[in-house]
Image 1 (cartoon, helix red, strand yellow):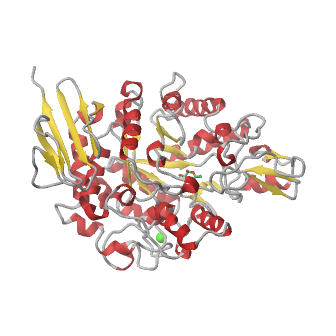
Image 2: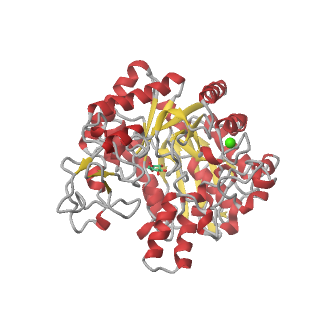
Image 3: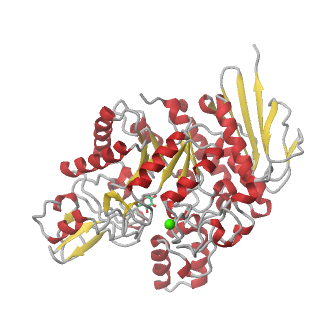
Length: 549
Ligand code: GLC
Ligand code: CA
């Protein structure tokens, strides 16, 4: 059976498959490419890899629009490649995490194609249909993804279907029992293949409030999250899936993407008697500086700390966090939180603060070498549907191009989707031909090859951090306690009965005077020369103390 320790020991590496490694030089990352890098990942020290969706898809939303859950997108490889990657990963003690995108399908899925043609289709009830109300949309919900109605009209049946995301992604109707069975069948199919775990995409949104009522006029932007996030039935749906899966696959891990949850809801998903998920992904700390229309506000460390430690301490440390600072949906960690004048120091500091927190760790590909935002200068260089929709919406509202562009450069999801930077040869060693998306111009200075041979590199520092996480039991089990050392400092310890590991980081470009003499022996840090009374800009120091009774 699974136990919590397995979860707390996880170091998951997220791979945005299209951009990781192209084995056959068609400009698109693929499974064989990942296989060729498994030794690199083993050496980095991760014990699980999460692959973004690799199923057949028209690729309107980077594979988060699946048109066949049982087949692999040819661009990524075939079933033999899937077998092989599972086998090779397992040889290296690396678990494989697949995505289940079950809030919606692609509009090109055969279920939807049939459902939209006729009200009597066998698949009609797999989706959510409504007639017009007074000649208009069935309700006033606005998609927070597109900024437009969640409804799209279909002429054939004179009705509307619901989509929380783009019209290419019709929402599934989880009230339908047959649909629920289909999803279970898909999951079992891949478990049978040897997949170890699933990331359940936007799983807390699968159930919509009965009657789909209008949101009140004062609800911000008409977003209807309160009517489709964490609805009561969602817990039953996932619990039942889990129960069924556990009968045959007791070790399968379910990791739910649950944006917008609070600690009580997270408890309910993961620790309730009717347990549903093993792990949840919450985004309070990565979303806290999102401004209106998805712009980025100035980062506030105090707020960030209060969110991080609230989650670390929730339910006396019993809630198991997933800890991450980057993903395929977020800006690059180095660009979002780092300081370019103290680039290497600030990235190492962030990595230390992250990796010694309690919970399952997630490292987004490329963050281990400090990859940065794309910084494209032309809208045509961008590929992400969210970025394009956002750009054209603001342009249509007569906003200045330059202004819109400034925001896009900060928040576009493409920031984290540029090709992985393996070396300094053309196209960053990702492919021999022009990649599907432009590489970041800094690949000649920021790349794996260069960092492997440099003892002081960000990459080698990550390896040391991961190694410490594996050797210091307390970093797995110890409780997290925040230490308040004041502004621009972030500090905490992990503690058991007779051991303590303390992390103290300076999140500023100034020297900070702090007494560091009382925390024990230093075990790692990002500056060679250290002082016991001060921290240099973006310096982090970690101490270990053994208390002998
Ligand atoms: C999740 C994914 C994101 C996708 C969305 C819709 O948020 O991480 O990339 O666009 O779900 O499936
Ligand atoms: Ca390829």
